[in-house]
Image 1 (cartoon, one colour):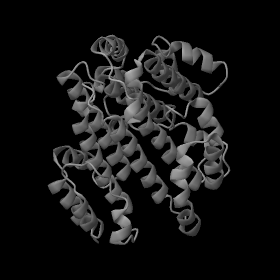
Image 2 (tube, rainbow, N blue to C red):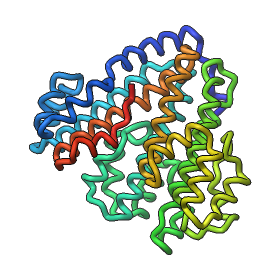
Image 3 (cartoon, rainbow, N blue to C red):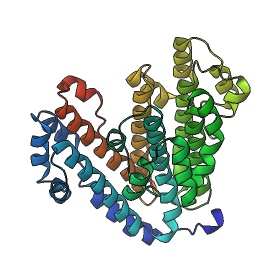
Length: 358
């Protein structure tokens, strides 16, 4: 991939980033969310959002879905697909390998949602409500994957398409059939995403150098999350070593393997807090012992670092990368609010799960 990366001209990135700033300017701000969370129902939310840029998508979805929650879910997915497609269309050729590598994060996110949902026999509509259409997995592709009857069938779909993720997931299939665990497939997919991003950022392009520090932070977070996931699963040090993601700053391989052998979760948390770095410590404070909240807090930290980098170097790809995280976070927030209103989640509880993108 390195040989294929052409350095984007500053003028190319300047025009592209001007488009991205305009798109970022349309995102909801923190003060916009509170009135939405205080609405009485999902129907009221749908009416309120009809006056926003989501309006045309809601109108179209309403003709296909009677329930407000279903119409909103479809509208949110359509808006996200449209925004990411516009971002790709506007990007100069030299920036596209980097964008493709960024999209791979959300491809793997979708794979993990599908693996977890199918393994736990969750209703397909519930799985769909959490998916993020991006990169290789647009809305149509996700619908096809949702039709998989089980995990081997999901992998067969990917293999039929010639997707590289089929080969990534296959080695973990034997473990899944033996024990029902999908963790090995999840972790292998995460490592592949990291590899793609390292490769895309390994050139000497002016717009990419600044993001290598961000990638190191991402590796630290991923290794901390991996330790959360494999705790208590009985993996040997040799097997745990295979789950380590290279490139981090604060959490090196030797420490990772040592932490993976710990027997007490509180001891693991204390060790991560002491050696994981300030961003990891903050995420631990926000999430406690909940691995799902830890993933959300880590994602928010990634977004905040990208926002900072986009200010430090306004001509870098960091601006587009930060927009992707912000847009996805907006969609996640609106999905949470719509479901919270539908199922009567108390306002104070709903606020706990909202991370503000801007």
